[in-house]
Image (cartoon, rainbow, N blue to C red; front, side, top):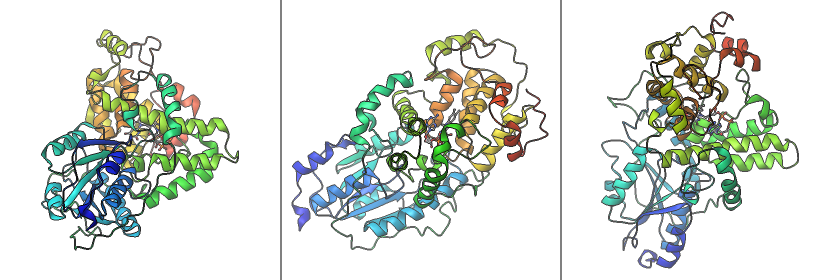
Length: 474
Ligand SMILES: Cc1cc2nc3c(=O)[nH]c(=O)nc-3n(C[C@H](O)[C@H](O)[C@H](O)COP(=O)(O)OP(=O)(O)OC[C@H]3O[C@@H](n4cnc5c(N)ncnc54)[C@H](O)[C@@H]3O)c2cc1C
């Protein structure tokens, strides 16, 4: 039996990969029958370094790979909209796994225990992916203490593994030189290693043509699925292809024009791990290579996809208060406190904000774009969050409301980008002091009037059920 001759040196070399964190060291279980990849954040088969490492370890051990996906009925802040998108993605993952020759098992409660599954399949080694957010990271730590087999995790959803930096950065331009040095080592086509061995046993798996949320009593079903986005790697690749062919060349402009659909709209796919940022970056590099796209435009896109996105991941990894106002930049905290008693000419409740019932039609349109389509343009996200700071009773409540609405309605919500974006807009993280203004103090403000000078606000409002063009706030 090949599984009786583990190769600790080669395995140790594999574990030395900068993407890998050994959470529980040790030799693979003697007589183990497979290597399990516990898929959670990186919900894809293509260009998935966590799966590649699993396959490489399994090939060294002469064992097959089994992918396990345990459906969690109460994933923090997830609702029906998120689960539907995720289920669409799992259908693609199952099909792609079959093509790659790896077993793919989806289990629902009460049969979704990973520990029980590892015993059922006699796993020799467990490999997982990573998620910097608080609760998923806690699950991995707890699991590592409980397990009796080695457990590694692989940083699969960033271009440069976060461990390379092992810290956060105050401003983007502090991060840029570090990123620039690291990037050439990691921006390379993943191996997509073929498995050498097949799993022959019969494994029960939840049929993905059935509703995986059936019977989840506590699931919030009031936030309905949207048909503006279809989940999954296949849809993500189509969207990437369309973006690169039709929109990349005009990206620099479109990113400041919420009234047109000119950005990639890949954020939901990146959030669910349906597509790798490496896949996106390489496709953009390739499209830009013949000079079809101007260098500045390409760089601008890469800066969002890699620099801002990975700055956000580092922020969440290293800032324990990433989702409350406690994460404020020190200068912003001080100035917001100084201006806490400023008169707030307009105040709205959370219910009014949720229902897009403010007197600012541009803001209402943005809120509706989010609640009705599951996504909002970046330019509007900045304005949207800053207005919440202006209208909420205090900055701490503004932060909480922005997180709650963003996480509930955006398909890409519950993501490091969301927490970092809100922290940027409301409490000055990754930004610098601006000019003193009521309520905002030195935090950068945005007004409807200045927004309307930059793009066709009327067209944006009309597209999102806007009222009459009179933007009463302007
Ligand atoms: C208040 C606020 C809340 C936000 N909430 C989220 C969120 O919940 N989830 C989320 O993914 N992004 C969030 N963002 C960041 C950004 O707005 C979205 O990532 C972007 O609008 C997604 O659209 P796109 O895919 O077309 O982006 P593109 O412009 O096509 O960019 C490509 C990718 O780069 C990344 N990116 C782009 N802009 C940023 C940014 N400013 N910061 C970090 N990464 C970026 C995203 O992964 C995006 O998919 C937020 C920003 C703000 C200001």
